Image 1 (cartoon, one colour):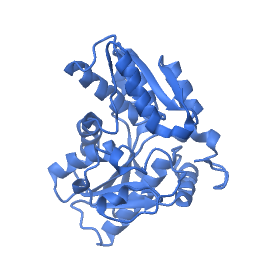
Image 2 (image 1 turned 135 degrees about the vertical axis):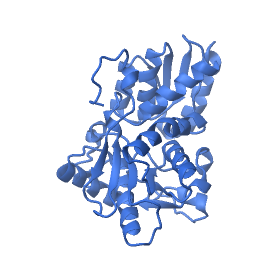
Image 3 (image 1 turned 180 degrees about the vertical axis):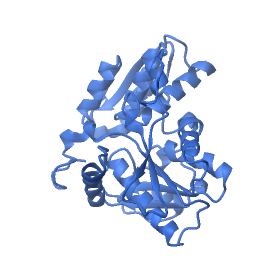
Image 4 (image 1 turned 180 degrees about the horizontal axis):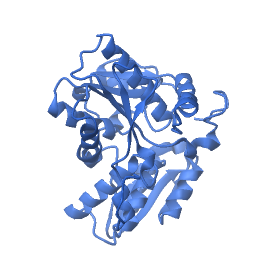
Length: 326
């Protein structure tokens, strides 16, 4: 972030230490604070796992310098891994279904990665299979697999959570975060639960997503426009630990769209749909803490704004709800 006052040797040193900012629309008695992860060099929270996972995998010998990282990804994780790979002496290949963000694929290539497209109709399943096939064909290659790799959650346990803890003087009553891989919430939740078992933990997903099935709820699977969080196949979300979560909140796309516009026009936050979902859920939790419906150990709620809205402008995030292409 902009607090660095000395020259740095690599862009990797700019990852993390992002600002923690008060969300103005929250109740005064129980403030909500959001980590602005677009301040990372690749403009998303996925820079954290890109750096952390590859450094640990190099240390463990999972891949050697000059080797190749192969990952099935639709966007920000690919960019985060690409930012780190070249600086760490690794090659990067990303397998991306054709229909996913053209802007993100261009950025991956700009960062020196190779992008392999698979047919859109076959979804991420084929992309995952193709990534493993490519890795098997190369001499020194590894598939980090963010959905199942414990290093994903560990990155947030070791970096994101301690930064929040320090900024709020260890007075965090609740943590709220959207779940795609679930790595962000699992890492943060484990950190704060170890320090206070009463920390209230809330997972966020779009309405129509299936995460609530982890808590035994019946969910009607539906398509949703909110990006980067949610799942239709809970078997793929190996990192999610229901024992670390008090509740799972589903946020409607229309509310997300309205909150994206409000965050921009009223608070100057140019953030994307997952950030808006986190903001809505975090404010609800703050009101419940204020009203005594949630017994939290401290009167502060922490969440994350994972990336900016700029990568989604072509999808009409600031146009009408009907024009927004999820």
